[in-house]
Image (tube, rainbow, N blue to C red; front, side):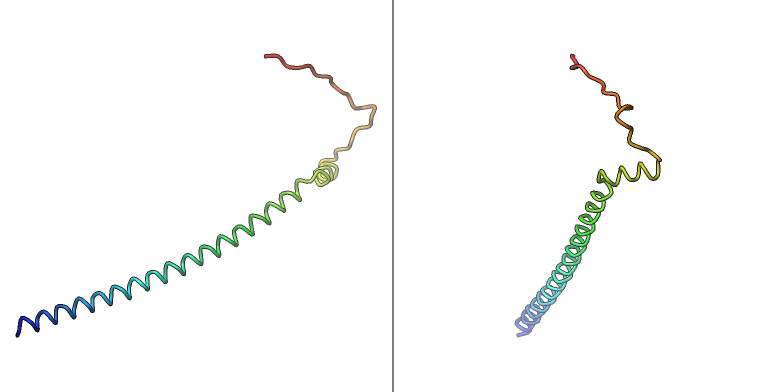
Length: 94
């Protein structure tokens, strides 16, 4: 009789330990899912920022903007037709 009682207590302990293990595993899975969702949101924000930076770079690199900066900040002017020299090149041979 005591052996049967011991076996029942042992099985109950195993069932309890298994239940605790399931609860812990579910909790860790939820925490991992929450972390994953946060990382996805951060990725989306970084992608949005990257797109905005590419648009800003394209805006700053337009030909008109570069010409205006050269004219305003550097005092450069476009030379007249009489000051332009065309150099004819030949094909390079190796």
